[in-house]
Image (cartoon, rainbow, N blue to C red; front, side, top):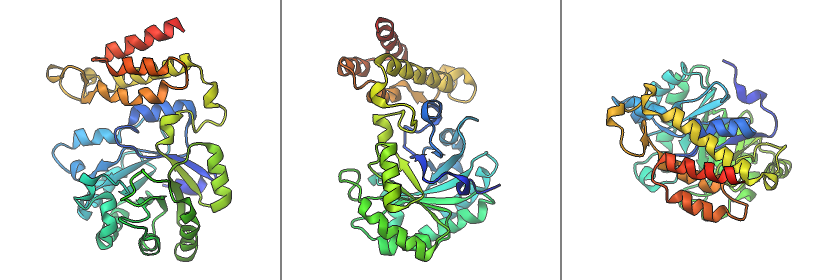
Amino acid sequence: MKNFWIDLPRPFTALAPLDGVSDVVFRQIVTEIGKPDVLFTEFTMTDGLVSKGKEKVAERLLKTVEQTPVVAQIWGTIPEHFYQVAKELQTMGFAGIDINMGCPVREVTNRGACSGLIRTPNLAAEIIQATKESAGELPVSVKTRIGFEEETIDEWISFLLKQEITVLTVHLRTVKELSKFPAHWEKMEQIIKLRNKIAPQTLIVGNGDIMSLDEINDKYKQYGCEGFMIGRGIFSNPWLFNPKIAVETVTPQKRVNLFLHHIDLFEKQWSADNGSNTNVNEKKVGWHGSKNFALLKKFAKTYIQNFPEASILREKLMETKTLNELKKLLQNYSAKS
């Protein structure tokens, strides 16, 4: 399989792996209205993928034929599990494998996983090597941060660059900073210099506080990193990757209708009678297969904003108790628009 990263435009764009957000349904929405150059799955636990309950965990790796290229992002702490999972991912139609060494959630880092691996570089190297050995022709990449308690670019980023990975995505904050402080884009120059010295073949992707394609173009001219990953920015503007759509011109009805389309895709994907999820007799109220409809509420602010009645409508949406109630409220608003 050809290394797809090589043929991407410069700069290229990527939708970040977002837990509970960038599932197969939301990626389909983004693909339809303004597709980035690269898509990532939600981050998926390797321990779960080698367990008896792997079918439930593997839902995070679902994708459609339109969602390409899509990279599977995985996380964990056991190199052997990365080896086993990488071998299986070869057969699933992914364009690459990405190792999560950047998630700052305390429950995860306390287990030594994700950005917790910044504190155990030897284990991080074992994980990367195990994944590369089993990935076949799939390119292996890593997503990380610039340090744990404090910035350690010279030590940590240099260490990762020596692992001969295809792509290194750097979220320009420390783990301690979470997303509470501005991303340190001024550090990108240092990272690029290290890359040029240590691993000129490795592509660098910058991540943090990017809210528009114009910002990407400006940062590309300033820093020269090959790619840019957007996470939280997609919540403010789901059309962000589409250069032909100015978000301020999107009508309230178009926003509502897109939310309805998202709900429709959710309903079809996670319906209990689709044969792939929870038995219909075991389905709980408010659940569709293995997904609770309440997950849709986190997208209310994404779609319902920037028009006079938006806050009132969002408040009503958050009070709904069922998927049908949520859908009917939106349908009634759309009919009145």
